[in-house]
Image 1 (tube, rainbow over the protein chains, first blue to last red):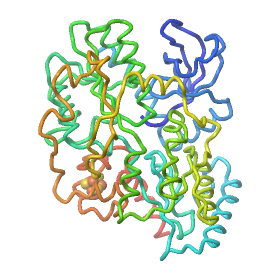
Image 2 (cartoon, chains in turn blue, red):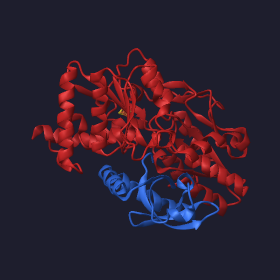
Image 3 (cartoon, each protein chain N blue to C red):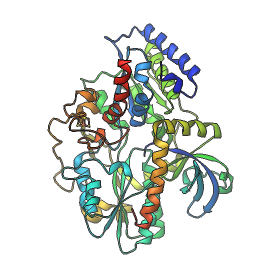
Image 4 (tube, each protein chain N blue to C red):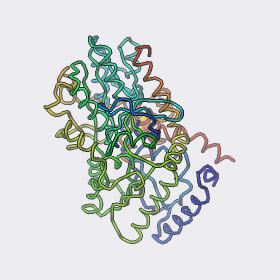
Length: 96
Length: 380
Ligand code: SF4
């Protein structure tokens, strides 16, 4: 919960709410981009970010994203985060 | 050095390790007279054990594991309040999975869920918001916990709920801040601390200046660090060099992610939604001034404490920790986990008695998880 996970923004989904689709280790997840939206929103498409509990908190480069992901895998945190994302989807449906 | 091969860049790691050994020699630190370096963040504690950094570095360095695991510092009474909220039939209680197994005085959230409470593990407060939108006839409460890294997420979610006019969403706010407990530890005459490795992701939000007091008022070095193993080694080296040179500064090893002044949007959201509580209770540390946050009056409608009359200061507070439980002493670095009488006997990651056994970021769980491998290696 304390460590962010790198993800790439692939599309702006709701400009009013500052929401975007991100790809995190092959999993798609909607995230909030308020904290990294300093310029036009469309500029974020393709950008790598550090995503923390559903919020893109910092822009990073691709190399940093790869390094971070590897460190998270080593700690077992990447798997845990992806599981938490999957669990959350069933929480929305009330089937948890 | 069997762990070094696991580093992303083992050659670079060996170079830094050699330099660390050299500076430790220059300082004259030994196993009998070590320098005490506290890693504040639980993520760092986990990485230190995972990569065996405490043993790759010379015996002249003693790592003290700090209070930087938000799950571990939650007192039982906070969990009891969560259970009370969750067992209210009107409520859908949403929480990060990390909090589920923390023992309360009667039960954990996991047990409350098994007993029929509608408790849902979510990845993000945004998902709790969505559950509120989909269940207009239920009250959706989100358990807001965590340090400054997590605080913006609940602040922004509350702002969003306010914009939408959601009336069935509230946050049970137990957010805490990193600097106040550090001050408590520095003021403790029993603590020997020569320098700090600071949590990088917290500083991504707050910047590095909230730590100025450590250098200025207490004359101790602090280096804000990333959590890759090599980041940690480099940060330890930077702390050691400061000690050798008699400097006390706030340095930023993780500048590629941590801006000096933090993240403007996050800080503005926190400031808009939250204010400091006069005091807040930490497991093992007691009540600490201005160390917790509560929701401002302007957002009262989204404050679960207001809505349900449950929370900090509402009931009788202090709940006795289990007999002989040494969580407090471990948390403040006074003893190592195996010295607790419950360690590995009455308290394991499967059946935790204390919170330090619950999360992989807790010192006890980290010892337990990697301790077996270590014992085997000693025999080799
Ligand atoms: S072993 Fe369990 S009870 Fe003892 S200090 Fe660790 S978490 Fe607390």
